[in-house]
Image 1: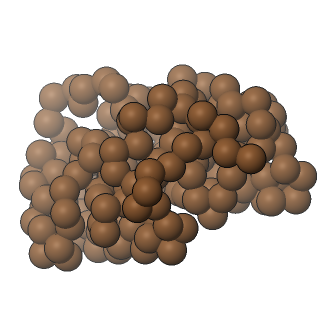
Image 2: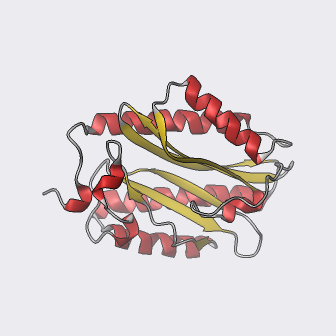
Length: 218
């Protein structure tokens, strides 16, 4: 039964949500492949806009974020510190919210350049925790709240700190904001297919960097 927090518009289809997800991942991966040492964070953000336009986006529904180095510790609502230049051994993440076919794509991932083993491990851990939590959702039908409790456990087991200010959110046919659904991590029921973004943001326990990964629960 549809709840107020999982309401959708008349144009909503799961097929369109998956299309929007896939096209947003196309941008993430294309952008991630061209970001290289020596590039400024602002230059990467400008390149992102060019790629989105070339792929025929309708619009963005949240600001496009590219975070380099220590800025990978920043949450979505926080501004980057300065305009850092990507180093030879460095880490960055991409977080995009793009509308395709009237539906909201939202995807994000972390990339590493160079040979820093801890940065590579951090990026891999964000994806691993996401995969583990997604598998728990599929296997058990856990509530959003329980999924983030599990995410915190997994992060601790793997040696990272989970940022619980970042707890996922609704997506839908544009604009999802009219549905007032709140955060996935506060949702006390099993999230339905194609309506929620699971976000994982972790931090190194001592060094100034972190990693991020998000995708549609579908």
